[in-house]
Image 1 (tube, rainbow, N blue to C red):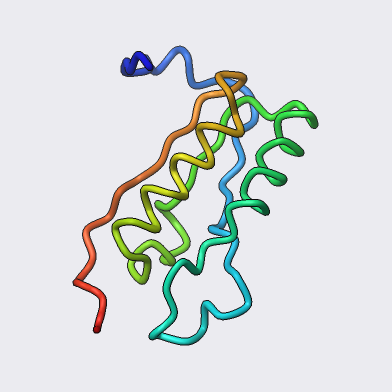
Image 2: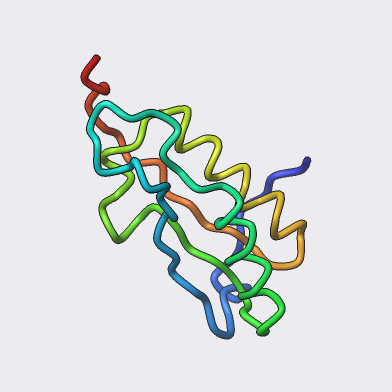
Length: 101
């Protein structure tokens, strides 16, 4: 996969800011693997099919501060895989404190 920076002129049209879909057990601080990756793919596909021009995630709603590093990577991979190059994905990778064992 090739990575490149977008230029400001490429950021056009309508972009969606999506929350991280959580599984039912996500409210338990001891839970792991709390990101609903199937729902992530469903949402991305729906947005792309509706004509969205790009997707933003993990930068505005605060949930990333409570996700493990692995959950963040899995979520970003699910976003990119579902978009399949059809639209750009911009995702923050906020620093968070380590998960409580």
